[in-house]
Image (tube, rainbow, N blue to C red; front, side):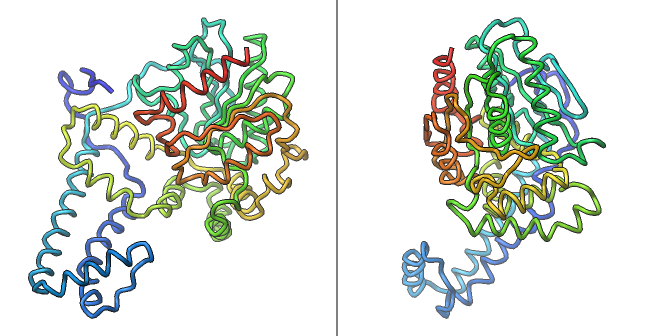
Length: 416
């Protein structure tokens, strides 16, 4: 992203108001434990009782051999120095992020339709091109697909002649806090689709991203008369394929959250972020150490801040939907087992008789590729693509346009 005057010269830096990286106390404690454990592990390392993970066993043996030729006190002092330096870098990176002057300032698209907390954003209202409705996850803000002027899948689609619509779920309001997954599909997605059909008077292409892909699948299967194709981006389906232990752990977490859901009526954002941090507990530490010392006006720094702002701008998940996700999707594997129902009907991808494109990023750490591949197998007329990308990078990374955007657009063009 190119620096704009709105962000830098001409305006004073905004006061620090960022919440992230959320949850901040957890990330601070995790980083501190990393630095402290480096020193605490030294006695175990010296007496040979330190347990290495299998992947580090060879490197650990090499380290032990080298330590035999090293003064232990000098080595311990060096570890202490490095730990303190890295901790200082981490804190510096946090401060640089939290005080960075960047604020997202893209022009807002037209709102075609709204109901409760949900809006349908129309990015190209004058276009006669192929209409596309894009369904994001319920727990992340929609603008990952419209992040910056230089990294916006939505605005890029406009430039290719399409008429893209984006569902903005918003945070659950009074009504949505009592919603089930069925309610989101039948009371939000289907009326939004009806509105697009009324305006465009032609079949609609449906795109779903991550969790939104499951909702998009149900929408497409239930409304085939109005849909000409389905694109699924990093969409899980077989939750017990790839890492069944992780899926069962998520189901256990859901059971443990029962009192909170009963009391609060939703899963708070910081709880959701805590669950994601379990996938890679030290990711935040590595990111902000790497961010420390960057030129804050560089494109890379601004892109980092823009993405981190989105990561830390999540929304809560309604209690009934959370129970369905944890117990149904993760615990019972209801989508792949044929037990997931919407309005009493099984969501059956084999019943979708239109073309589909299943995009499975090969380095996805959030949705196991095996889980997403199961949906590609189930859809009868599916094309599968496996770009060498990660879950978020596939949509906003430096190579997103070449690896994902262009192949998706070419596939959509072939539908017309």
